[in-house]
Image 1 (cartoon, rainbow, N blue to C red):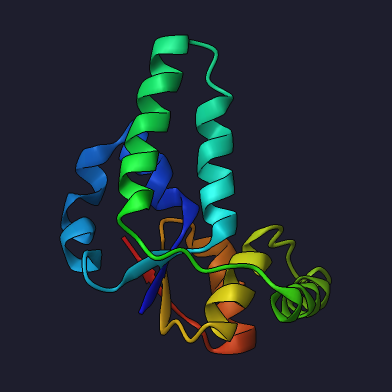
Image 2 (image 1 turned 45 degrees about the vertical axis):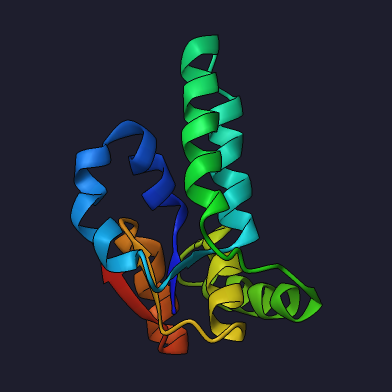
Amino acid sequence: MKCIDTTYFVDLIRRPSAIRTITQKLDNEGVPTIFNVYKALFGAYSLKDEDKREKAKAKLNKAISRLEVLDFDYNDAVKAAKLGGTLTHRKHVGADAIIAAIALNKGCEAVVTRNEEHFRWIKELTGLSVEIY
């Protein structure tokens, strides 16, 4: 199982050609976290143009509805705080600590992302594999 980062969903809306190859690979093994769903839909709801907003929401809801979504629980919150707090002295990774914590606690073998910088630091600390597309 591989955790799909929010960058994938951003690219689903903005640059669908950038994720064509990875989409085929993730069909059977890709899962987002509930936090990725929040971030992706937040972006869609933030669009000022009503037509673009409705199209983005529909596209995201269609894609997400076909996937298992990993929940965020107390143990994930503790792990995310530990990761974020530890890394803040070297590099601020922000909400990506939450995504990594969920992925680690739920048994994901990797995070699939375009955000190499933040997840590189997390990989160094935790060993969580990162697949850059």
